[in-house]
Length: 478
Image (tube, rainbow, N blue to C red; front, side, top):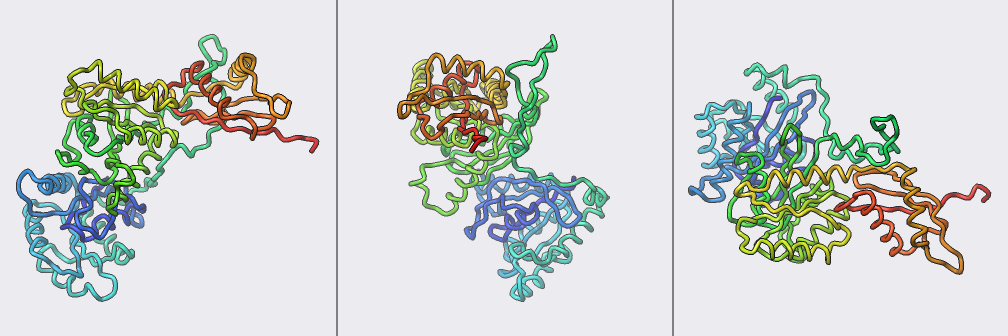
């Protein structure tokens, strides 16, 4: 697939163009310059063209070692890895010395360049388009990414640039572009149980969906080492890292393979308490992180093992549980912990008292910086993903229900015993069970917790959220 890198100085509309080409509002967009920091990739489409597009941080002159310098390095890597570079300038502002400097740098690199003049809606950008000829990058393409104007000319320019490299056939391939965000919307019927070696149906098994690549979102408070962990897993400096808190802004999805199994890793922005979030961009960052949790299969919650478990850590864990995602807790910076046994006990005790609904969630001791415990982290993720995809046969569930009802019958309501007639699993991811009750509204939450605890203990559904819905069988004589 042909790759296009979108580059330019800050606030010229690179992320707006990226969103326009991929057809979704993925990259965070704001009038404030310098919002984008990491490289963000996506599958783009423009009429019949199918391609890969990379959004980059704004090119700025910066001192060595600074955050801006590291952002510029990530942008340079995108230019080297792309087949064609889209250099975006702001036609309303005109050509600035920064545009001229970086146009010269890109020209020296020998990259194939398309000069894009953005914000050309109306006639306001006409002078900027004429001035852009002075950059010596050929004929400029006038567009308005925000309003969708000039995309026909951009289409022709992209096709011509690909044709010069012999890639036009790849760019206009007949493959259908799919952009499914979440495979959990697929129909989840009551699948038949597989057979064991003797030809008998098994009672508990993993759903077919467990064979799909797992999407893992790395979440946590700011400065927990989320981007460092992903860089260590990928064994490359793919994401921007540093001592500054809150470097990551966009949620970046990256393909990854471990022991022959494919994964999708999603880096997210640090999530602070809502009361402390006042900046507009930070609100957009948190919304993006929440969206990443919603579309994830499993979330790795990173905590700082050198500190006590923070209240915000527990809030994020509850949020993951409410979304029905599987969870693994990564006790990061474990190499810096002095009393490891005491720290492990504190984390375990706090989880037992504050997160009873996730009883049995694995806590992996690790160090993303020093690449310690990463294999254990992925092994725990595989185990929890299997549990998250667990399906129990209806026959086995109702034999279990009889035992539970006999041990602890439902309560009396108005002198009559509530009756639970039937239970069945209606979906996985997370495991969801339907109870057919004579009077659903009167069944107390305490009894539902009793049944949920029984399901966890008897079917190994540890550390994941379980959902139970109540239904009332229709009266055929009504």
